[in-house]
Image (cartoon, rainbow, N blue to C red; front, side, top):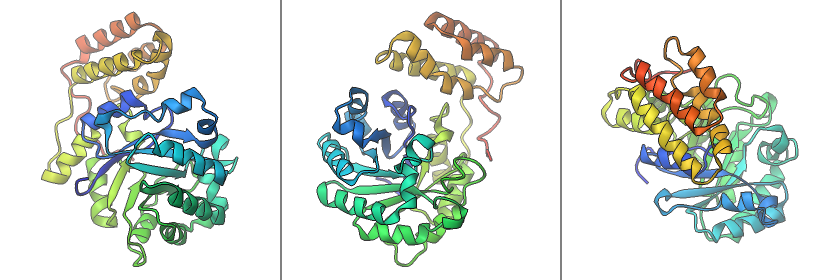
Length: 329
């Protein structure tokens, strides 16, 4: 992997194969699966098993597992390893209620001894590198990531990714990179430390590397509807110059290609519904776009999608998607 890697963060119902394809095209250095439930995987639930499929062009690639039972997590790690990813990643950071309040994901931050034991057992069980993604702590009073990171490192993991918020924050407020920097600059830490949270522009990416010293950055929500962010950031890191943004017509072409890839694996209506999260953030800086956006979010057939996208291309196609690479708070 190249110096200062740019990593696609795992996101449930987002980082599926069609979306990963575009992030890879635009320069993501490491790809992550969607979240894989250990319990569903060992039961052979088809939807979950399909998440293990890897296209040869996606390597290096990590499968991320979550669960609260050590035996199930170990078994699922062995199953996932058989699909030949490059990394097995353990999700100790998902904050959503249906995961965290059941003791999995970020819920593991309330039982650090179990987290450590689970990680150690998985490291022993598989021959692949094991990594961890987690958060600063469960809440503001338990932001103990410096100590937790040390203990996780001692289990034999090969890298740690840290989202700069607590579980209680969910995705509210600004990510606290000072604690991510404290983990990286802890003299006991020798494994790579990857920072995550609010990397929404080339400027913020450069700050993460230069100010906080992280070994890599992970980009999540900012890539939704804007997979070229990886290309923008790489260009800025390499040259110090901002790339011109794509034109609206280019984004229309990208959305159509994305939708066509989704249509290969889903029936038409479900494919269109799954694309709404991308429609919602596309073209958001355009003037006088509100009514068209509402219409785009209400389409239910491929013909309707094409009709609205043609309207967008004809009216705004020669405009840049935004005035310059944005610095979003």
